[in-house]
Length: 323
Image (cartoon, rainbow, N blue to C red; front, side, top):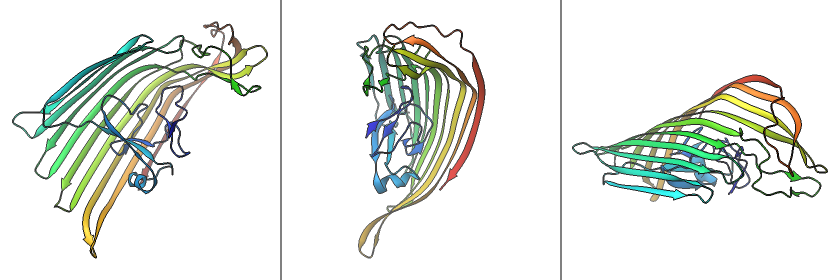
C-alpha cells in the first residue's frame, strides 16, 4: 500500500495492491463510506486494512481492498489527555481527549479536539485546521447505541508539487522547496460527519447491528496549474483554475445480522445484511482561465496573473446504490 495522487495534498489517497485513487470511496469511517477529505484525525482509535474476501463485507469495492478508520468511543472509566507538537518549519498542533461516564445514567461521553497552525514545508503556505468530535454512548443490558459527530474547518495549501523534465526523465533541478504555483493556491473548507451505531445481542449466538452515516464537505479552491514546461528556457505555461462553492454529501446505511452457530458439528460464523448509499455533488462555479507563459523555474516571480481572463461553469451529480 502506497500513497497516490492526493489532489495537491488536500485528500487522503492510497493505492492498495495496484488499485486506488483519491475520492474512490475506499477509506471508510466505522465501516461506512464518507466524503471526508481527511479521515485520519485526533478521533482515530485504530486503522484496519482489509483485502480479499474480508473487504467484501463492506460492499462493492475495488479488488485492492479497503481502509477502515475506527474512531474512539466513550468509555465507562474517566480518563483524559492533552498533548502538543511543534514543527521545525514553524507552528504546531495541540490535541485534547477526554472521556468518562455521566453519573446516575447509563451514558458515557467523549470529547476529542485538535488545533493545527503550522508553516508549510515549502517556500510559502500555512496548514491551518480545527477539529472537534463529541460522542455519546448508551450502555444497555443487551444493547449499545453510540452517536458521534465531528466537524473540521481547514485551510491548506493546494500544492501540485514539482514537475519532470521529459528530456531527462528526472525532476527539474531546482530546490524542492520552490513552488511553481501562487500564494493563492489554497483549499478552504469545512467537513462534517454524523453517525449512529446500534448493536443488539438477541441471544448468545446472534447479534443485530444498524449503522447510519451522513457526511458532507464544502470547500472552495484556487490554483495556478502548470500545463507545460520548456526545458530550454525553464519557462512554465500555467493556467489559473478555481472551484468555488463545491459541496459533496453522502448518506450511507447498513443493517447486519451476525450469528455464531454449529452446523453438522462445525463452528460457523454467518453474516447477512443490506446497505444503501446516496451521494450528490454540487459545484457552483468551476473557473478555467487562459493559459499564460509567465513563470520561470530558475527565476521565480509570483503574482503575474492579473491579465488572465476566465470562463465559469457549474456541475451537479447525484446517485444512489443499494446492495
